[in-house]
Amino acid sequence: MASKVPAAENTLRILGHLAAQRGPVPAAGIATALGLPRSTVYHLLTVLAEHGFVLHFPEARRYGLGVAAYELSSAFSRQEPLSRLGRPIVAALVDALGESGHIAVLHGRDVVYIVEERARRRPRLVTDVGVRLPAHLTASGRALLASLPPGQLRALYPDSDAFEDRTGAGPHSYAELRRLVGEARERGYATEDGDVTPGFASVAVSVRDHAGWPAAGIAITFPRENVPPERWDALAARVRDAAAELSRRIRGS
Image 1 (spheres, helix red, strand yellow):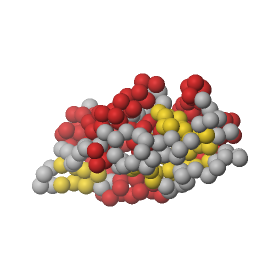
Image 2 (tube, rainbow, N blue to C red; image 1 turned 135 degrees about the horizontal axis):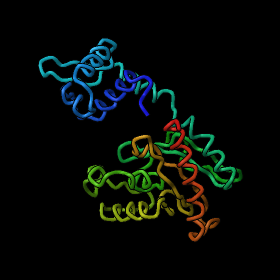
Image 3 (tube, rainbow, N blue to C red; image 1 turned 180 degrees about the vertical axis):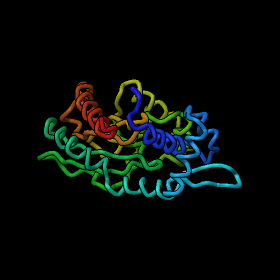
Image 4 (cartoon, rainbow, N blue to C red; image 1 turned 90 degrees about the vertical axis):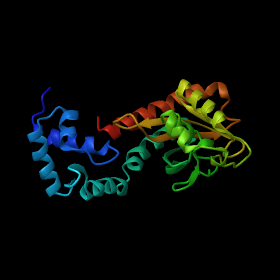
């Protein structure tokens, strides 16, 4: 269906296209990529530049994102939308399962926990809000790493020095990590079993954003003796439902 506000839609398409580039690009390239008349693209770029959302590099005859676009992304981070949207979803999951849950985001080779919901009569875990842990050791991290292109995964783990150790468990090489994330990708969820805290295990699912990229990981952590491995599939199905709901809310659908 055709947009009722084509100028607004085309403006957003231009900003989205610029955000996906590795550097400034010519206006003609934008017009070709988006299938828009050059005159329309030049007009919209001029307005965007006047408001600081686009920078014009006259010598190079190229356009890139401006400071105002950066301020929007900073505002997104300040408003903590993932934690605000995700906290009630994780709280409901914890109430239903009786085990602790959390949300983590990928930051380099680490995950940073942004939501932590502890179940009643369960001990405090190391996954408090703001805590960083090596992604390759955690279920959330493995779920997120399994969602990355192979080249990006390899770039994060170029050699054995990239593999921090906590308990002696977990992958110590890229080959081991690639096997773990491959299994997670095939299964639809990631696991860890004593790799972070002895006696505790976790299952996690990646949350996708509107572009299909991994935005966060939702995980449930439990005493291993309480949930035998044959029940992990059923547990993961509940986590997958929660991840799908958070993904839907992120997309605004």
